[in-house]
Structure formats: structure tokens, C-alpha cells
Image: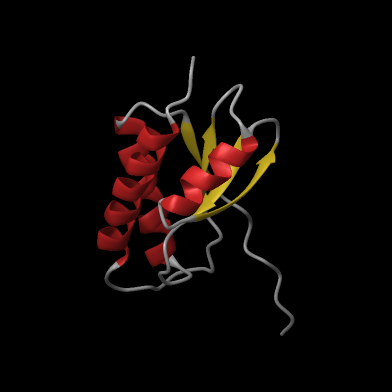
Length: 111
């Protein structure tokens, strides 16, 4: 499958808008480090990074093979972030991309 990086950029922009909308509101609950992950076999790293950056998002990767970990747009750190990542996931899934939500355990804070 040939990757259309322009389509990826547009789809990520739409996911970002959905995330911003869902992130509005209360931000209670546990600290949350959820991120959207996207897997595109045979993708070009430079073009992937450019597409993600052009959408206004930030990512790390590739890790775990060709999986990129994309942070949501600026929002809270608790349930707000969880809602934002879920909105990104649903939007990208609806647009046909192979995505998942990566959840990290709450960091252990010194008390």
C-alpha cells in the first residue's frame, strides 16, 4: 500500500480538531499519558515526521516497528487528555488508518 502523506496530514488535522473539541471541560481523575499510535508499514520516516508536524501535532517514533506515538494537542493532563486521545483515535479509525490508544501507567510521584 502506497502512503498518501498529504491525506495523512489532513486526516491528522481533523483528528486534532476533534481532540480539541473533546478536551474542553473538566479535567479530573488520574494523571494520564495516553497517546495515539499509528502503524503504517513501509512508511518513510522523514515523510511521516513531516506529515505529523504539518498537522500541528508532535510524535515520537518509529518505535515498536513502524509505530509512531502522537501526542494530543495541548489540553489537560487527566480526563481531558483521555477524551482528546479517544477523539483522535475515533476520527483516524473512521478515516481508515491503523491506529490504537497507547496508555502508560500513572507515573509514581514522590510524596
